[in-house]
Image (cartoon, rainbow over all chains, first blue to last red; front, side, top):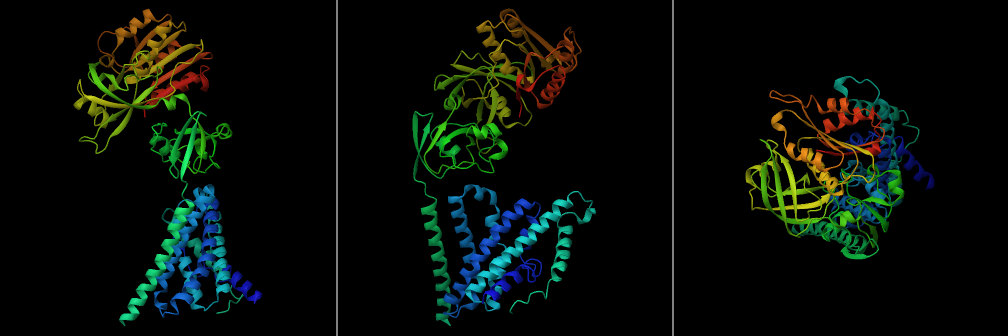
Length: 196
Length: 365
């Protein structure tokens, strides 16, 4: 049981990275990966929200939608839960840690529209995970996403001094790097086999 | 089929309602700060509704903390000292506060939220800031594009200011602006006359406020100002003074000269006034009178281009300063005018021994 949880957790980080293997959550990945500092902040926030919403959505799906036979409504239900949860987290952070609140700034509301969050909730249903497993899958995906954006921010900080062909500046070179990173992560496939 | 649809709608509605309720409760419970007491300078207590920024909360109580950006945290002017209840320093305040200011409990009032009782220390100048209703008493044409406007205080009947300070003149909504805007003008009048102020206003083509002053404002009209603001005031030392001004930058220096005349201030003072052509020059006779009335004052008008008769200084004002001022190692310099003129003058005089703490300026924004 424990071993399985760990496999889920680590495979979500390395072999089945939500960003580099599934290419979900690309918009904020491209937009907020200029500095390591902000990337760490956003990565931490995404990880927290992912771990919580995957469990919340598990209960919404299995305890509310399935009994009424409303599985087809999961998209809208998940989005509502994610939006409300992010809003709730924002209120709590503002109350108890104004410093963190201002540091995260616009990132918090941005998480609402991060498709990696919805993606994890949907994968968790498709792969028929349990509640605990969903938590580990969500947390692992969050760490994986954070790892990818921090790595990208590190590369982009270094790249500021590089001479990039004019036409590739900005999103162009970032997407190419993301592709190469994805290839590198592909090399880890097979090291861990997530239970399908 | 129908029941299925109703159930679906009901479930989603219930889920949304539940979450909305949760958020409303969180908002009401967590973000309600209730009534907070602001203790100002250990004497005055103001009770305000929590949750607002300190800047807005103070404004509701009639305390105008200077702010040029309107509370967006970009100008850094709205600093106040928060002794208690300020909470940790926010990242948005950092760029505007020096190490010493942070240790001294200075905060940016537009970023700081009122979350509980607070103890503040506000300088006297801020407490005396308020809005004044005035009436246009006299408009004097100084030259072809500059006027002096005398505003008589109506309510409150007196405006207490220091020579060199400025007010903000309100331009009411008219053709060029859908809402009132404010522009800063220095007082040109003597500070011991509290019943009126004089402003020197140069026409800016297409300018919202100057068009209002030149096209619409007439003697007898009402005008609203607020202030006074600024720390461009004469220091209390006995160092030699160099004044440098261009255009309507003469205004605060005129006010300071009235002060020096009243005090019979013995400091050596030289006033370099730069303009492009002879027709730009105004208030020359008054400045010559100051040379008689202020013990050690000299007026040096500098004209860049001239066609008629002119036996004074010519060229740029910095060139005249360069010719006449040799050593600045114990001189205070007061500058008012365009940023370009100020920067060039400061650079020149720093080469002659001027230091930052002996430099005072009022840049046109």
